[in-house]
Image (tube, one colour):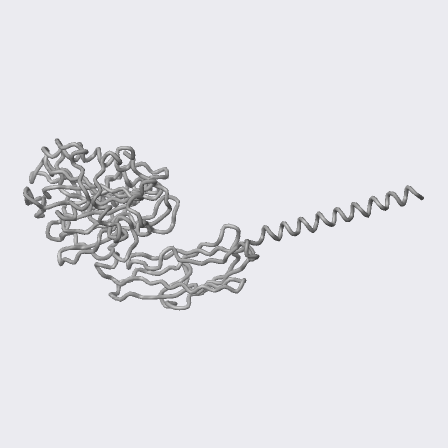
Length: 430
């Protein structure tokens, strides 16, 4: 009998201990689910990765995050006549569960070939009671429509009847959403771009595609491989650049006009090895300028390699351009009168650490950014200038070209950044 009472006492005490442990574990679990304010750690969020699309673009992407068990409903509440939540069907509302990794979504539409900007709105409701209204818009067909951007490389728009500002889009390896390849300011009179602006990042050179396509073509050519690169189909994007207003360099360089000149890439082919079309677009006539061959294969080519070595997680932003000073001349090649620039330049800008996770416009200290320019005379003698001696400030190129570069820099630090010319600091990146 005494043994029975002893065992019973032990059992009761153990039950109390077990109950206490259960309560403690429950409390711990509850604390894990709460932040310091006693609220769930899953804050419901909804956003658009950007809210304004160009007239050539066909989608805007967004995302939702929150408790994985929450459900959501996405509804297009304005712009229903032109926007959809599906690429293949007119879907105006979708529902689902957020999931552990969140939910990505697309707002899809066609090219806007009208002159008017169109606006829409998407409403996102989450089962915890939160609601988000996100506005979006797509520009109308306009030469200046790409310039409300936060792209780090983007120069300021400059009004001129002879200038066409245009951005070419591509799809990178393993991705389905188009991204910008490069932008140009093209001169219809000179038949040369004043500048070509582009990002350098591993996403543009990653993947299994490592081929120089040599798909020489007028702009807007579309090819898929070797079988059709010499006979492309043309899918016109706007603003349209008539082929008669482009250098006719499809079958070769400038021939008898001047055999010292190469078809000089402004965005190098080797900086675009992600997919066939990403590389093929670098062979558009609008990306070429008549460049002295000695310089092209010499110091200029070496700087292109250096720039690719300076890639960083934050992105390296580049502008390559042409100047028309003493030494500018005309050549006549294949029924085209083309202006040969007197000088060519390359501008580079990136964060010093390379891993801030910030947009250039978000940086408020010039000490976080490094910037430099390089300029050469577009002659064989120009190649005698070393890369170090070719270094200049971006401010000098602005003065000589009349263009404003990297216009998304915080205005309070822009002048200080553009005055930089520390070549030694870049050597460690090259």
